[in-house]
Image (cartoon, rainbow, N blue to C red; front, side, top):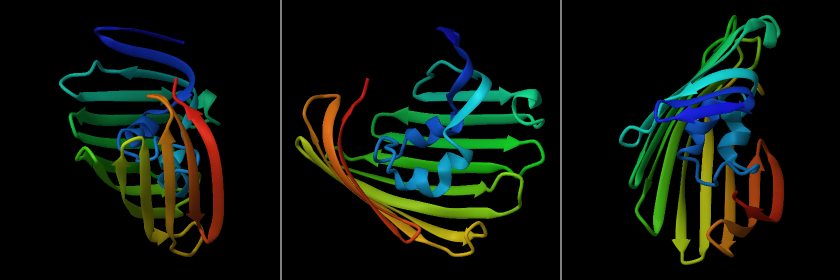
Length: 208
């Protein structure tokens, strides 16, 4: 459920969380299910929240912010807050997402993208804890997309600088090729290297 106007937008229920939107502002695959950033760092604690109340500011010259809150009775006895700050204007997009569940450590992701037109580059720094523990996974991402008319190729890499969760630091990556059939529909093929596993996929995607 949501209502909105020139004062901003209020939402409640199960929804994509503010941290997810902060990553979506700069992530190169459009937050596909094979996103190497999403799969490695889990959008800093998950992509969705249940029973969330949130308020998003109106867009002010490219800047917006959103704050979400889940009451303790709706989150296993521990309240959670989740927020973002996003600047997206022209070729520049920057997003900061931070969230914390009471009793747990703070998760965050900071990233940015610059679009040169035929080429875009993106980088990020991520820090996430396993729920209910002090086990941390921290690292960065770096990637680029080349646009060749209707065809685009993306290579995006992540590298752990600390990984208590698995006990081993990984370099992960995704290679994606896609061909636009229309403004909102494309076919794709992707290869995801994730924590020493190999994953492949082909498909058709339409953005509503």
